[in-house]
Image (cartoon, rainbow, N blue to C red; front, side):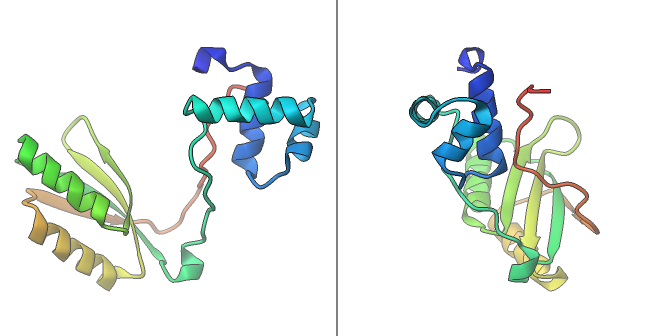
Length: 156
């Protein structure tokens, strides 16, 4: 699908990434089209999987989740059974916002959002009680410099 996206599709995506609650009329006006063609383009991009579920961005700090940790994990286990259990454990933990498998010395990095250091320790203790992990390093984010969910669409 990426090669099939034209400039209008990309402009529509940029508008949706900025604020998905905009009406079709507003989006159509901004991208220089009309409501029905914009709706058809959005529908086609949904069907193709370019556009996923619509959600809202919630302010974690206003909910009392003031601590963001980046957790670096090294493991000595690389068998499929261990990985299946580890991934299931991560998916079951709502504190884990993101999890990535890495190339290099670190095997996984997690983005974990909790209320404070004590809540992180509770998360950590639960994690290591469920799966064997060789080494864990937790890095506390002191300040979020940039946050976006918008992908670069090449409209510059």
